[in-house]
Length: 377
Length: 218
Image 1 (cartoon, rainbow over the protein chains, first blue to last red):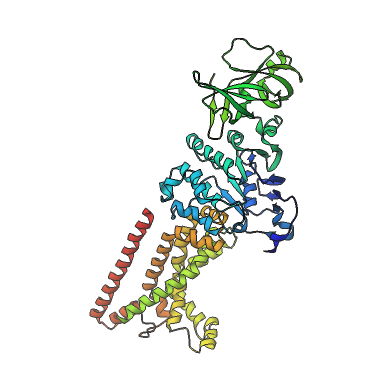
Image 2: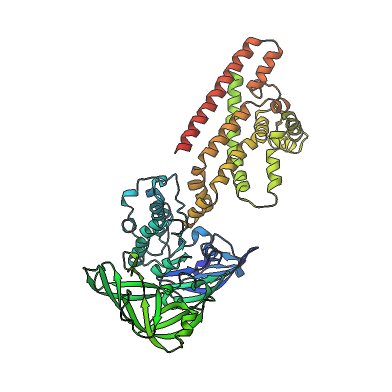
Protein backbone atom coordinates (compact mmCIF):
# COMPACT_ATOMS: atom_id res chain seq x y z
CA UNK A 1 0.00 0.00 0.00
CA UNK A 2 1.08 3.51 -0.69
CA UNK A 3 0.93 4.63 2.93
CA UNK A 4 4.16 2.74 3.51
CA UNK A 5 6.04 5.39 1.62
CA UNK A 6 4.78 8.52 3.36
CA UNK A 7 7.34 9.78 5.79
CA UNK A 8 7.12 12.01 8.83
CA UNK A 9 8.52 12.27 12.31
CA UNK A 10 11.69 10.96 13.82
CA UNK A 11 13.20 8.03 11.95
CA UNK A 12 13.93 5.58 14.77
CA UNK A 13 11.01 5.58 17.13
CA UNK A 14 7.35 4.85 17.62
CA UNK A 15 5.22 7.95 17.71
CA UNK A 16 1.67 7.57 18.80
CA UNK A 17 -1.35 9.62 19.59
CA UNK A 18 -4.51 7.81 20.62
CA UNK A 19 -7.92 8.80 21.84
CA UNK A 20 -10.36 6.04 22.64
CA UNK A 21 -13.41 6.18 24.81
CA UNK A 22 -15.62 3.44 26.16
CA UNK A 23 -18.51 3.80 28.59
CA UNK A 24 -16.36 3.53 31.69
CA UNK A 25 -12.92 4.21 30.29
CA UNK A 26 -11.00 6.77 28.31
CA UNK A 27 -7.58 6.49 26.73
CA UNK A 28 -5.80 9.69 25.76
CA UNK A 29 -2.08 9.43 25.04
CA UNK A 30 0.47 11.28 22.99
CA UNK A 31 3.96 9.90 23.25
CA UNK A 32 7.09 8.65 21.61
CA UNK A 33 8.83 5.38 22.40
CA UNK A 34 12.46 4.88 21.37
CA UNK A 35 13.29 2.00 19.01
CA UNK A 36 15.71 0.32 21.37
CA UNK A 37 15.77 -1.46 24.69
CA UNK A 38 12.78 -2.41 26.79
CA UNK A 39 10.21 0.27 27.49
CA UNK A 40 8.06 -0.53 30.49
CA UNK A 41 4.46 0.58 30.68
CA UNK A 42 3.42 0.58 34.30
CA UNK A 43 0.05 1.26 35.88
CA UNK A 44 -2.72 -0.28 37.90
CA UNK A 45 -5.24 -2.50 36.16
CA UNK A 46 -7.69 -0.35 34.26
CA UNK A 47 -5.05 2.32 33.57
CA UNK A 48 -5.30 1.64 29.83
CA UNK A 49 -2.08 -0.30 29.30
CA UNK A 50 -3.67 -3.18 27.40
CA UNK A 51 -5.87 -0.84 25.35
CA UNK A 52 -2.75 1.06 24.31
CA UNK A 53 -1.02 -2.13 23.13
CA UNK A 54 -4.14 -3.32 21.30
CA UNK A 55 -4.35 0.01 19.46
CA UNK A 56 -0.69 -0.22 18.44
CA UNK A 57 -1.28 -3.75 17.14
CA UNK A 58 -4.45 -2.70 15.32
CA UNK A 59 -6.61 -5.12 17.34
CA UNK A 60 -8.70 -2.21 18.64
CA UNK A 61 -9.70 0.80 16.62
CA UNK A 62 -9.34 4.17 18.37
CA UNK A 63 -11.78 6.99 17.71
CA UNK A 64 -8.75 9.11 16.94
CA UNK A 65 -5.30 7.75 16.33
CA UNK A 66 -2.03 8.29 14.62
CA UNK A 67 0.84 5.83 14.69
CA UNK A 68 4.18 6.46 13.02
CA UNK A 69 6.84 3.77 13.18
CA UNK A 70 10.35 4.62 12.02
CA UNK A 71 8.95 7.48 10.00
CA UNK A 72 6.27 5.35 8.30
CA UNK A 73 2.62 6.04 8.93
CA UNK A 74 0.85 2.87 10.12
CA UNK A 75 -2.34 4.58 11.12
CA UNK A 76 -3.88 7.99 10.68
CA UNK A 77 -7.58 8.17 11.39
CA UNK A 78 -7.69 11.78 10.14
CA UNK A 79 -6.99 10.53 6.62
CA UNK A 80 -8.79 7.20 7.24
CA UNK A 81 -5.67 5.14 6.84
CA UNK A 82 -4.91 2.14 8.94
CA UNK A 83 -2.74 -0.87 8.25
CA UNK A 84 -4.61 -4.08 9.07
CA UNK A 85 -3.25 -6.13 11.97
CA UNK A 86 -1.46 -8.67 9.80
CA UNK A 87 0.43 -6.01 7.89
CA UNK A 88 1.82 -4.30 11.00
CA UNK A 89 5.30 -5.61 11.60
CA UNK A 90 4.92 -6.41 15.26
CA UNK A 91 5.18 -9.35 17.60
CA UNK A 92 2.53 -9.64 20.30
CA UNK A 93 2.86 -11.69 23.47
CA UNK A 94 -0.48 -11.95 25.25
CA UNK A 95 -1.01 -12.54 28.94
CA UNK A 96 -1.96 -16.15 28.19
CA UNK A 97 0.16 -18.05 25.63
CA UNK A 98 -2.58 -18.48 22.99
CA UNK A 99 -0.72 -21.33 21.31
CA UNK A 100 -2.62 -23.11 18.53
CA UNK A 101 -3.58 -26.40 20.15
CA UNK A 102 -3.86 -28.28 16.84
CA UNK A 103 -0.22 -27.61 15.93
CA UNK A 104 3.01 -28.88 17.46
CA UNK A 105 5.34 -26.41 19.15
CA UNK A 106 7.51 -26.43 16.04
CA UNK A 107 4.59 -25.61 13.76
CA UNK A 108 3.41 -22.93 16.18
CA UNK A 109 6.84 -21.34 15.88
CA UNK A 110 6.71 -21.65 12.09
CA UNK A 111 3.28 -20.05 11.88
CA UNK A 112 4.51 -16.47 12.06
CA UNK A 113 7.88 -17.19 10.50
CA UNK A 114 6.32 -18.53 7.30
CA UNK A 115 4.09 -15.50 7.00
CA UNK A 116 6.81 -12.97 7.75
CA UNK A 117 7.82 -11.10 4.67
CA UNK A 118 9.16 -8.55 7.01
CA UNK A 119 12.28 -6.51 6.96
CA UNK A 120 12.42 -6.04 10.69
CA UNK A 121 15.14 -7.39 12.87
CA UNK A 122 16.66 -10.53 11.44
CA UNK A 123 15.97 -13.38 13.84
CA UNK A 124 17.60 -16.78 13.64
CA UNK A 125 15.39 -19.79 14.42
CA UNK A 126 18.05 -21.85 16.19
CA UNK A 127 19.19 -18.87 18.20
CA UNK A 128 15.70 -18.10 19.46
CA UNK A 129 15.00 -21.76 20.24
CA UNK A 130 18.24 -21.96 22.21
CA UNK A 131 17.69 -18.62 23.91
CA UNK A 132 14.29 -19.66 25.22
CA UNK A 133 15.32 -23.22 26.02
CA UNK A 134 12.83 -24.87 23.64
CA UNK A 135 15.08 -27.58 22.20
CA UNK A 136 13.35 -30.51 23.86
CA UNK A 137 9.86 -29.17 23.32
CA UNK A 138 9.62 -28.78 19.55
CA UNK A 139 7.66 -31.95 18.84
CA UNK A 140 5.23 -31.61 21.72
CA UNK A 141 1.64 -30.49 21.45
CA UNK A 142 0.80 -27.30 23.40
CA UNK A 143 -1.43 -29.25 25.80
CA UNK A 144 1.62 -31.13 27.03
CA UNK A 145 3.49 -27.96 28.09
CA UNK A 146 3.63 -26.35 31.52
CA UNK A 147 2.44 -22.76 31.85
CA UNK A 148 5.98 -21.42 31.85
CA UNK A 149 7.02 -23.50 28.83
CA UNK A 150 3.94 -22.44 26.89
CA UNK A 151 4.66 -18.77 27.55
CA UNK A 152 8.27 -19.24 26.40
CA UNK A 153 6.99 -20.78 23.16
CA UNK A 154 4.64 -17.85 22.66
CA UNK A 155 7.50 -15.38 23.19
CA UNK A 156 9.64 -17.27 20.66
CA UNK A 157 6.74 -17.39 18.20
CA UNK A 158 6.35 -13.62 18.41
CA UNK A 159 10.08 -13.02 17.91
CA UNK A 160 10.30 -15.39 14.94
CA UNK A 161 7.89 -13.36 12.82
CA UNK A 162 10.75 -10.88 12.60
CA UNK A 163 8.93 -7.93 14.09
CA UNK A 164 10.22 -4.36 14.18
CA UNK A 165 9.25 -4.38 17.82
CA UNK A 166 7.48 -6.67 20.27
CA UNK A 167 4.48 -5.82 22.42
CA UNK A 168 4.28 -7.81 25.65
CA UNK A 169 1.09 -7.57 27.66
CA UNK A 170 1.77 -8.80 31.20
CA UNK A 171 3.43 -11.97 29.87
CA UNK A 172 4.17 -13.18 33.40
CA UNK A 173 0.99 -12.15 35.17
CA UNK A 174 -0.79 -15.48 34.70
CA UNK A 175 2.14 -17.44 36.13
CA UNK A 176 2.95 -18.25 39.73
CA UNK A 177 6.10 -16.92 41.38
CA UNK A 178 8.17 -19.98 40.53
CA UNK A 179 7.22 -19.85 36.84
CA UNK A 180 7.91 -16.11 36.78
CA UNK A 181 11.37 -16.72 38.12
CA UNK A 182 11.77 -19.33 35.38
CA UNK A 183 10.95 -16.90 32.57
CA UNK A 184 12.58 -13.67 33.75
CA UNK A 185 16.10 -14.86 32.98
CA UNK A 186 14.99 -15.80 29.45
CA UNK A 187 13.56 -12.33 28.92
CA UNK A 188 16.76 -10.92 30.25
CA UNK A 189 18.80 -12.93 27.77
CA UNK A 190 16.59 -11.73 24.93
CA UNK A 191 17.28 -8.22 26.05
CA UNK A 192 21.00 -8.86 26.08
CA UNK A 193 21.31 -10.85 22.85
CA UNK A 194 18.67 -9.64 20.44
CA UNK A 195 18.28 -6.08 19.43
CA UNK A 196 14.48 -6.23 19.16
CA UNK A 197 12.85 -3.32 20.99
CA UNK A 198 10.14 -4.37 23.42
CA UNK A 199 7.20 -2.52 24.91
CA UNK A 200 6.55 -4.32 28.16
CA UNK A 201 3.28 -3.82 30.02
CA UNK A 202 3.11 -4.76 33.68
CA UNK A 203 1.55 -3.77 36.96
CA UNK A 204 4.45 -5.37 38.83
CA UNK A 205 7.14 -2.81 39.61
CA UNK A 206 9.58 -5.62 40.47
CA UNK A 207 9.39 -7.01 36.93
CA UNK A 208 9.66 -3.52 35.45
CA UNK A 209 12.71 -2.70 37.59
CA UNK A 210 14.36 -5.95 36.58
CA UNK A 211 13.86 -5.64 32.83
CA UNK A 212 13.18 -2.16 31.58
CA UNK A 213 15.40 0.66 30.39
CA UNK A 214 12.69 3.26 29.92
CA UNK A 215 9.47 3.60 31.82
CA UNK A 216 6.04 5.06 31.13
CA UNK A 217 3.58 5.37 33.97
CA UNK A 218 -0.11 5.34 33.10
CA UNK A 219 -3.07 6.31 35.18
CA UNK A 220 -6.73 6.46 34.13
CA UNK A 221 -5.89 6.32 30.43
CA UNK A 222 -3.17 8.95 30.52
CA UNK A 223 0.62 8.90 30.64
CA UNK A 224 1.67 10.65 33.83
CA UNK A 225 5.42 10.05 33.66
CA UNK A 226 7.87 9.11 30.96
CA UNK A 227 11.67 8.78 30.95
CA UNK A 228 14.58 6.52 31.77
CA UNK A 229 13.84 3.87 34.40
CA UNK A 230 15.95 5.20 37.23
CA UNK A 231 14.70 8.75 37.09
CA UNK A 232 11.03 7.80 36.70
CA UNK A 233 11.31 5.42 39.66
CA UNK A 234 12.55 8.38 41.72
CA UNK A 235 9.33 10.28 41.07
CA UNK A 236 7.94 9.93 44.57
CA UNK A 237 5.18 12.37 43.67
CA UNK A 238 3.47 9.78 41.45
CA UNK A 239 0.72 8.05 43.39
CA UNK A 240 0.96 4.80 41.39
CA UNK A 241 4.67 4.45 42.04
CA UNK A 242 4.50 5.33 45.72
CA UNK A 243 2.73 2.16 46.82
CA UNK A 244 3.98 -0.75 48.86
CA UNK A 245 6.56 -1.60 46.20
CA UNK A 246 8.02 1.92 45.80
CA UNK A 247 11.74 1.78 45.32
CA UNK A 248 14.68 2.63 43.14
CA UNK A 249 17.24 0.95 40.93
CA UNK A 250 20.99 1.52 40.80
CA UNK A 251 23.50 -0.06 38.48
CA UNK A 252 26.43 -1.55 40.39
CA UNK A 253 29.61 -3.43 39.55
CA UNK A 254 30.64 -6.58 41.39
CA UNK A 255 33.87 -6.05 43.33
CA UNK A 256 34.61 -9.16 45.34
CA UNK A 257 33.01 -12.30 46.71
CA UNK A 258 33.36 -13.51 50.30
CA UNK A 259 32.87 -17.27 50.24
CA UNK A 260 32.76 -17.63 54.01
CA UNK A 261 29.59 -15.55 54.36
CA UNK A 262 28.34 -16.08 50.79
CA UNK A 263 28.27 -12.32 50.22
CA UNK A 264 29.27 -10.29 47.21
CA UNK A 265 30.45 -6.73 47.52
CA UNK A 266 29.19 -4.43 44.75
CA UNK A 267 30.19 -0.85 44.03
CA UNK A 268 28.10 2.04 42.77
CA UNK A 269 28.59 5.77 42.83
CA UNK A 270 27.19 6.01 46.35
CA UNK A 271 29.56 3.48 47.88
CA UNK A 272 29.65 -0.26 48.50
CA UNK A 273 26.77 -2.66 49.09
CA UNK A 274 26.79 -6.25 50.27
CA UNK A 275 24.44 -8.59 48.47
CA UNK A 276 23.98 -12.26 49.17
CA UNK A 277 25.09 -14.96 46.78
CA UNK A 278 27.99 -15.29 44.41
CA UNK A 279 28.26 -12.82 41.57
CA UNK A 280 31.06 -12.83 39.06
CA UNK A 281 33.51 -9.99 39.89
CA UNK A 282 33.50 -7.34 37.16
CA UNK A 283 29.90 -7.98 35.99
CA UNK A 284 27.26 -5.29 36.12
CA UNK A 285 24.30 -5.80 38.39
CA UNK A 286 20.99 -4.07 38.57
CA UNK A 287 20.20 -3.55 42.22
CA UNK A 288 16.70 -2.71 43.35
CA UNK A 289 16.15 -1.11 46.74
CA UNK A 290 12.63 -0.85 48.11
CA UNK A 291 11.77 2.38 49.93
CA UNK A 292 10.40 0.31 52.83
CA UNK A 293 13.85 -1.25 53.31
CA UNK A 294 15.71 2.05 53.74
CA UNK A 295 15.90 3.80 57.11
CA UNK A 296 17.75 6.98 58.08
CA UNK A 297 19.96 8.04 61.02
CA UNK A 298 21.85 11.21 61.90
CA UNK A 299 24.97 9.43 63.11
CA UNK A 300 26.56 6.33 61.68
CA UNK A 301 25.19 3.47 63.75
CA UNK A 302 28.00 1.44 65.27
CA UNK A 303 26.34 -1.82 66.22
CA UNK A 304 23.51 -2.96 64.00
CA UNK A 305 22.47 -6.12 62.15
CA UNK A 306 22.33 -4.09 58.99
CA UNK A 307 25.42 -4.36 56.81
CA UNK A 308 24.71 -1.64 54.32
CA UNK A 309 25.14 1.83 55.75
CA UNK A 310 25.92 4.63 53.35
CA UNK A 311 26.23 8.43 53.62
CA UNK A 312 23.40 10.23 51.84
CA UNK A 313 22.03 13.73 51.27
CA UNK A 314 18.31 14.56 51.51
CA UNK A 315 17.11 15.89 48.15
CA UNK A 316 13.39 16.08 48.67
CA UNK A 317 10.69 15.07 51.13
CA UNK A 318 7.27 14.06 49.78
CA UNK A 319 4.16 13.44 51.82
CA UNK A 320 3.12 9.80 51.48
CA UNK A 321 0.36 8.43 53.70
CA UNK A 322 -0.92 10.02 56.92
CA UNK A 323 1.77 8.17 58.83
CA UNK A 324 4.70 8.15 56.41
CA UNK A 325 6.80 10.35 54.13
CA UNK A 326 8.99 9.43 51.16
CA UNK A 327 12.50 10.87 51.25
CA UNK A 328 14.56 11.16 48.10
CA UNK A 329 18.25 10.71 48.82
CA UNK A 330 21.28 11.30 46.69
CA UNK A 331 24.26 9.00 47.06
CA UNK A 332 27.06 9.99 44.71
CA UNK A 333 25.37 10.31 41.31
CA UNK A 334 22.69 7.76 42.22
CA UNK A 335 19.45 8.19 44.07
CA UNK A 336 17.45 6.12 46.51
CA UNK A 337 14.02 6.52 48.07
CA UNK A 338 13.36 5.90 51.74
CA UNK A 339 9.98 5.54 53.39
CA UNK A 340 10.01 6.68 57.02
CA UNK A 341 7.30 7.59 59.48
CA UNK A 342 6.20 11.19 59.60
CA UNK A 343 6.96 11.14 63.29
CA UNK A 344 10.61 10.16 62.70
CA UNK A 345 10.86 12.88 60.10
CA UNK A 346 9.69 15.45 62.64
CA UNK A 347 11.84 14.08 65.45
CA UNK A 348 14.95 14.06 63.26
CA UNK A 349 13.93 17.52 62.02
CA UNK A 350 14.64 16.35 58.49
CA UNK A 351 15.42 19.15 56.01
CA UNK A 352 16.42 19.20 52.35
CA UNK A 353 20.22 19.29 52.18
CA UNK A 354 20.76 17.34 55.41
CA UNK A 355 23.67 14.92 55.36
CA UNK A 356 22.93 11.66 57.11
CA UNK A 357 23.22 7.87 56.83
CA UNK A 358 20.96 5.47 54.98
CA UNK A 359 20.63 1.93 56.31
CA UNK A 360 19.56 -0.53 53.65
CA UNK A 361 17.96 -3.66 55.02
CA UNK A 362 17.84 -5.79 51.90
CA UNK A 363 18.27 -5.40 48.21
CA UNK A 364 17.07 -7.30 45.23
CA UNK A 365 19.77 -8.04 42.72
CA UNK A 366 19.64 -8.96 39.12
CA UNK A 367 22.47 -9.83 36.84
CA UNK A 368 22.30 -11.25 33.37
CA UNK A 369 20.91 -14.54 34.61
CA UNK A 370 18.95 -13.93 37.73
CA UNK A 371 16.75 -11.65 39.68
CA UNK A 372 16.54 -12.61 43.29
CA UNK A 373 15.79 -11.10 46.62
CA UNK A 374 19.01 -11.05 48.51
CA UNK A 375 20.61 -10.29 51.79
CA UNK A 376 18.39 -11.17 54.66
CA UNK A 377 19.67 -9.21 57.66
CA UNK B 1 -32.16 -48.66 -4.64
CA UNK B 2 -33.02 -45.67 -6.84
CA UNK B 3 -34.87 -43.64 -4.22
CA UNK B 4 -32.16 -44.24 -1.57
CA UNK B 5 -29.40 -43.14 -3.95
CA UNK B 6 -31.42 -40.07 -4.88
CA UNK B 7 -31.85 -39.26 -1.19
CA UNK B 8 -28.11 -39.65 -0.57
CA UNK B 9 -27.33 -37.53 -3.60
CA UNK B 10 -29.71 -34.82 -2.42
CA UNK B 11 -28.36 -34.90 1.13
CA UNK B 12 -24.73 -34.75 -0.05
CA UNK B 13 -25.24 -31.80 -2.39
CA UNK B 14 -27.36 -29.97 0.18
CA UNK B 15 -24.71 -30.48 2.86
CA UNK B 16 -21.94 -29.15 0.61
CA UNK B 17 -23.97 -26.09 -0.37
CA UNK B 18 -24.90 -25.52 3.27
CA UNK B 19 -21.27 -25.57 4.41
CA UNK B 20 -20.52 -22.72 2.05
CA UNK B 21 -23.56 -20.72 3.15
CA UNK B 22 -23.71 -21.57 6.85
CA UNK B 23 -20.02 -20.99 7.67
CA UNK B 24 -19.99 -17.22 7.07
CA UNK B 25 -23.45 -16.84 8.62
CA UNK B 26 -22.38 -18.73 11.76
CA UNK B 27 -19.09 -16.81 11.91
CA UNK B 28 -20.92 -13.51 11.74
CA UNK B 29 -23.50 -14.59 14.33
CA UNK B 30 -20.78 -15.82 16.69
CA UNK B 31 -18.83 -12.56 16.62
CA UNK B 32 -21.23 -9.73 15.92
CA UNK B 33 -22.73 -7.35 18.41
CA UNK B 34 -25.03 -5.88 15.73
CA UNK B 35 -28.57 -5.06 16.70
CA UNK B 36 -29.72 -7.17 13.75
CA UNK B 37 -28.33 -10.31 15.33
CA UNK B 38 -31.55 -11.48 17.07
CA UNK B 39 -33.59 -10.97 13.89
CA UNK B 40 -31.12 -12.93 11.74
CA UNK B 41 -30.85 -15.62 14.39
CA UNK B 42 -34.63 -16.01 14.58
CA UNK B 43 -34.90 -16.21 10.79
CA UNK B 44 -32.25 -18.91 10.59
CA UNK B 45 -33.99 -20.92 13.33
CA UNK B 46 -37.48 -20.73 11.76
CA UNK B 47 -37.29 -24.12 9.96
CA UNK B 48 -36.87 -25.85 13.32
CA UNK B 49 -40.21 -24.53 14.52
CA UNK B 50 -42.38 -24.38 11.40
CA UNK B 51 -44.16 -27.51 10.14
CA UNK B 52 -42.47 -28.71 6.91
CA UNK B 53 -45.77 -28.18 5.09
CA UNK B 54 -45.67 -24.46 5.87
CA UNK B 55 -42.11 -24.12 4.59
CA UNK B 56 -43.02 -26.26 1.60
CA UNK B 57 -46.07 -24.16 0.89
CA UNK B 58 -44.17 -20.87 0.87
CA UNK B 59 -41.35 -22.39 -1.19
CA UNK B 60 -43.88 -23.72 -3.67
CA UNK B 61 -45.18 -20.18 -4.12
CA UNK B 62 -41.76 -18.50 -4.34
CA UNK B 63 -40.10 -21.17 -6.48
CA UNK B 64 -43.16 -21.87 -8.67
CA UNK B 65 -43.18 -20.56 -12.24
CA UNK B 66 -45.22 -17.52 -11.11
CA UNK B 67 -43.13 -16.86 -7.97
CA UNK B 68 -40.36 -14.23 -7.85
CA UNK B 69 -37.48 -16.68 -7.97
CA UNK B 70 -39.28 -19.34 -10.01
CA UNK B 71 -40.18 -16.92 -12.82
CA UNK B 72 -36.62 -15.64 -13.05
CA UNK B 73 -35.37 -19.25 -13.12
CA UNK B 74 -37.70 -20.16 -15.98
CA UNK B 75 -36.49 -17.11 -17.94
CA UNK B 76 -32.84 -18.00 -17.44
CA UNK B 77 -32.92 -21.81 -17.80
CA UNK B 78 -36.16 -22.52 -19.59
CA UNK B 79 -37.32 -25.09 -17.02
CA UNK B 80 -39.28 -24.83 -13.78
CA UNK B 81 -37.74 -25.10 -10.31
CA UNK B 82 -40.67 -26.82 -8.66
CA UNK B 83 -40.91 -30.58 -9.14
CA UNK B 84 -37.22 -30.68 -10.13
CA UNK B 85 -34.08 -31.90 -8.36
CA UNK B 86 -32.59 -28.37 -8.30
CA UNK B 87 -35.73 -27.09 -6.61
CA UNK B 88 -35.37 -29.84 -4.02
CA UNK B 89 -31.76 -28.81 -3.30
CA UNK B 90 -32.83 -25.19 -2.75
CA UNK B 91 -35.73 -26.25 -0.53
CA UNK B 92 -33.54 -28.66 1.46
CA UNK B 93 -30.91 -25.97 2.03
CA UNK B 94 -33.48 -23.69 3.57
CA UNK B 95 -35.08 -26.52 5.52
CA UNK B 96 -31.74 -27.74 6.96
CA UNK B 97 -30.00 -24.36 7.35
CA UNK B 98 -30.36 -24.15 11.16
CA UNK B 99 -28.88 -27.63 11.52
CA UNK B 100 -25.71 -26.41 9.82
CA UNK B 101 -25.56 -22.93 11.36
CA UNK B 102 -26.13 -23.78 15.00
CA UNK B 103 -23.33 -26.31 15.61
CA UNK B 104 -20.92 -24.04 13.75
CA UNK B 105 -22.03 -20.99 15.69
CA UNK B 106 -21.55 -22.83 18.99
CA UNK B 107 -18.08 -23.98 17.91
CA UNK B 108 -17.04 -20.48 16.79
CA UNK B 109 -18.38 -18.95 19.99
CA UNK B 110 -16.44 -21.35 22.19
CA UNK B 111 -13.33 -20.72 20.09
CA UNK B 112 -13.53 -17.02 21.00
CA UNK B 113 -11.34 -14.32 19.53
CA UNK B 114 -8.08 -15.14 21.20
CA UNK B 115 -6.60 -17.62 18.75
CA UNK B 116 -7.63 -15.61 15.73
CA UNK B 117 -6.15 -12.43 17.24
CA UNK B 118 -2.89 -14.27 17.85
CA UNK B 119 -2.89 -15.50 14.24
CA UNK B 120 -3.48 -11.97 12.96
CA UNK B 121 -0.56 -10.55 14.94
CA UNK B 122 1.58 -13.32 13.46
CA UNK B 123 0.87 -12.03 9.97
CA UNK B 124 -2.24 -13.96 8.89
CA UNK B 125 -4.94 -12.16 6.91
CA UNK B 126 -8.51 -12.66 8.20
CA UNK B 127 -9.20 -15.41 5.65
CA UNK B 128 -5.85 -17.08 6.29
CA UNK B 129 -6.46 -16.98 10.05
CA UNK B 130 -9.88 -18.56 9.52
CA UNK B 131 -8.63 -21.48 7.45
CA UNK B 132 -5.37 -22.09 9.30
CA UNK B 133 -6.55 -21.62 12.89
CA UNK B 134 -10.29 -21.12 13.40
CA UNK B 135 -11.52 -23.92 11.11
CA UNK B 136 -9.20 -26.70 12.37
CA UNK B 137 -9.92 -25.72 15.97
CA UNK B 138 -13.65 -25.92 15.19
CA UNK B 139 -13.43 -29.32 13.48
CA UNK B 140 -16.00 -30.93 15.77
CA UNK B 141 -18.45 -28.11 14.95
CA UNK B 142 -18.00 -28.80 11.23
CA UNK B 143 -18.49 -32.52 11.78
CA UNK B 144 -21.69 -31.94 13.72
CA UNK B 145 -22.95 -29.50 11.09
CA UNK B 146 -22.21 -31.98 8.27
CA UNK B 147 -23.87 -34.95 9.95
CA UNK B 148 -26.91 -33.04 11.19
CA UNK B 149 -27.66 -31.36 7.85
CA UNK B 150 -27.05 -34.62 6.00
CA UNK B 151 -29.30 -36.61 8.33
CA UNK B 152 -31.96 -33.94 8.45
CA UNK B 153 -32.11 -33.73 4.66
CA UNK B 154 -32.22 -37.51 4.37
CA UNK B 155 -35.24 -37.65 6.65
CA UNK B 156 -37.14 -34.84 4.99
CA UNK B 157 -40.66 -35.62 3.78
CA UNK B 158 -43.15 -32.77 4.01
CA UNK B 159 -41.11 -30.18 2.14
CA UNK B 160 -40.27 -32.64 -0.63
CA UNK B 161 -43.88 -33.58 -1.01
CA UNK B 162 -44.91 -29.93 -1.36
CA UNK B 163 -42.08 -28.73 -3.62
CA UNK B 164 -40.86 -31.86 -5.39
CA UNK B 165 -43.80 -34.17 -5.74
CA UNK B 166 -43.08 -37.74 -6.71
CA UNK B 167 -41.15 -37.97 -9.99
CA UNK B 168 -39.02 -41.15 -10.20
CA UNK B 169 -35.30 -40.38 -10.59
CA UNK B 170 -35.89 -36.66 -10.15
CA UNK B 171 -37.72 -36.01 -6.89
CA UNK B 172 -38.83 -39.43 -5.67
CA UNK B 173 -36.57 -39.65 -2.62
CA UNK B 174 -36.70 -42.63 -0.25
CA UNK B 175 -39.15 -41.14 2.27
CA UNK B 176 -41.63 -40.41 -0.52
CA UNK B 177 -41.10 -43.87 -2.03
CA UNK B 178 -41.82 -45.57 1.29
CA UNK B 179 -44.97 -43.50 1.75
CA UNK B 180 -46.01 -44.48 -1.75
CA UNK B 181 -45.51 -48.18 -1.17
CA UNK B 182 -47.48 -48.08 2.07
CA UNK B 183 -50.30 -46.21 0.32
CA UNK B 184 -50.50 -48.97 -2.33
CA UNK B 185 -50.29 -51.63 0.44
CA UNK B 186 -46.92 -52.93 -0.88
CA UNK B 187 -45.63 -53.57 2.65
CA UNK B 188 -42.78 -55.85 1.55
CA UNK B 189 -41.00 -53.09 -0.41
CA UNK B 190 -41.80 -50.55 2.30
CA UNK B 191 -40.15 -52.89 4.83
CA UNK B 192 -37.02 -53.26 2.72
CA UNK B 193 -36.61 -49.56 2.14
CA UNK B 194 -37.33 -48.62 5.74
CA UNK B 195 -34.81 -51.14 7.04
CA UNK B 196 -32.24 -49.88 4.55
CA UNK B 197 -32.74 -46.28 5.71
CA UNK B 198 -32.69 -47.33 9.36
CA UNK B 199 -29.35 -49.14 8.99
CA UNK B 200 -27.84 -46.35 6.92
CA UNK B 201 -28.90 -43.66 9.41
CA UNK B 202 -27.55 -45.69 12.33
CA UNK B 203 -24.19 -46.21 10.66
CA UNK B 204 -23.86 -42.49 9.82
CA UNK B 205 -24.72 -41.37 13.36
CA UNK B 206 -22.50 -44.02 14.92
CA UNK B 207 -19.49 -42.96 12.88
CA UNK B 208 -20.14 -39.33 13.79
CA UNK B 209 -20.09 -40.07 17.49
CA UNK B 210 -16.94 -42.19 17.15
CA UNK B 211 -15.10 -39.48 15.20
CA UNK B 212 -16.36 -36.78 17.53
CA UNK B 213 -15.02 -38.64 20.52
CA UNK B 214 -11.61 -38.86 18.87
CA UNK B 215 -11.66 -35.16 18.03
CA UNK B 216 -12.51 -34.26 21.61
CA UNK B 217 -9.79 -36.52 22.96
CA UNK B 218 -7.16 -34.89 20.80
